[in-house]
Image (cartoon, rainbow, N blue to C red; front, side, top):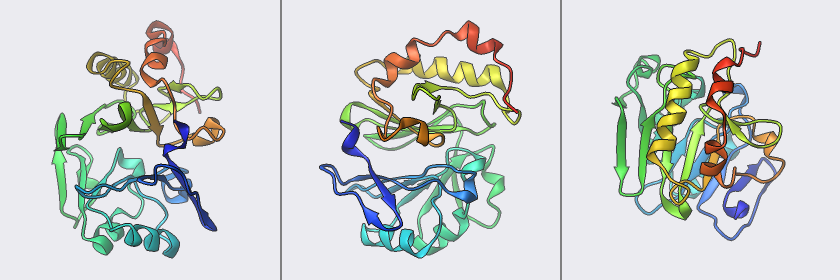
Length: 227
């Protein structure tokens, strides 16, 4: 199932069985963040900002443009204003961080926001005050986690505490909330917004719920920040 996401490169496009989900290369503007693109009849969704070069602009336009630009956290803003202007899309961000987009009309939410029957965004604070995830219920359930959950060196999903983490205990609480909300049947995959090189070509984190449920929260709470 790892082939459901096509990875984009400047010089080629992967041709895989399911060509409705794409990941862009890490973006310097977002400190190496990975952006995702979901192509749907209901309107395409861009999750975080890829590099705004001509190749990426042409690719987005060729697939019908962008209906929604969802920003998982303040570090993923990149060139959101330029993307919004180029594609005339609606920008969606948790209300505590929308002030970082002055001059841009932003749709905000507090706890959750439903785009349609298959897609919701969920506030998961901790990494930053407005850190949020996008849940897509197709294909067994996919969580686009931004930097709330990223792979470690073994490719396992974890919350990562850094010197810039807003509130570590709230981040752990947000993880517990996700475990209460989902089940192994409704959360099969995680698409992280950073550290994707640790996936070593697997492209997604499989068996996502079971891997999260195996984490020891008492140990996590004691982790010191990485510098």
